[in-house]
Length: 371
Image 1 (cartoon, rainbow, N blue to C red):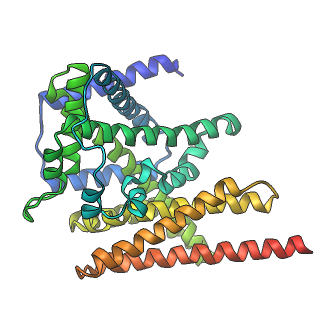
Image 2 (cartoon, rainbow, N blue to C red):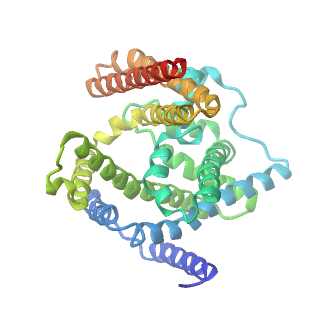
Image 3 (cartoon, helix red, strand yellow):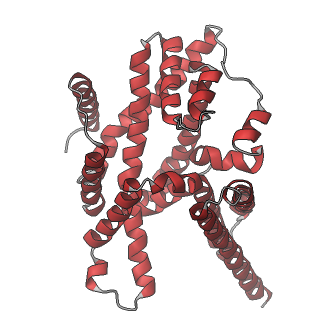
């Protein structure tokens, strides 16, 4: 095969040329056509082996994402050394409480992946672990290092919005007072990214804004095909649990990929994702709690130290339950939002299920130890 350096240079060139072509020859496509195009792409990407599409696409895309994080960090450093200030207020608890909720527990479900991510645990168990050349040295570097970078990214986004965008402009975009105006946090980040790079590195504002939008697009596309592939894995596991002998059609990865893509398309077509997205942070943190507790049980079963994973897992479980209860009674039920209320209650039921299973396991482990 090619040398990694040559492959990296080729990937950067492909990325740069593609962006330039898009800027030089912009194409406007109807949103429905985009849904169809992305659905077909996702169906193929989720069904074929990872080395055919996911690996080369992720590899090419990674340079854009790493470049964006590096640009934010360098621009922040240069802006700070030049004596720059942050536009946003240092402490604004009352504003946050009014628009989002109390710092605890809402902070964690708002930052989501930048704090702790159960979705990344699915990625690690579903695709990442199968691509490691060596488990012992690589798993810790990639798994732990990836989450540290996720936290750095979250910090960089907050700095970009705080430095590159005036606070009143930010609030107008993210928390509009006019009911007819939709919240647009993606635009707020893109404008903040452009402002930060302009102030820190001196690049023209439009370049930084486009770079910010491309970063968001890069993360979205990466999440899109990976999430559908993971959903396919989960469906395959579900069929094995439900059937003693799985029907042939349910065992094929094309059928499961197609089912996932159809569900994705319907959510997008009917805009249902905008409703369910509000629960993403809670579902993500609940999955993180389940992951930490599962690791704790695995360690405890083998007689190893487990409190370093168990205590954070319990904290995240309590935090997620508190957040779900808070938004249920403060927001969803008063507004009569049946879909979100039912989804919230389902997540609370799953959280209770985690508690019951955990209690049973430790009770059984204690009885075995007593014998």
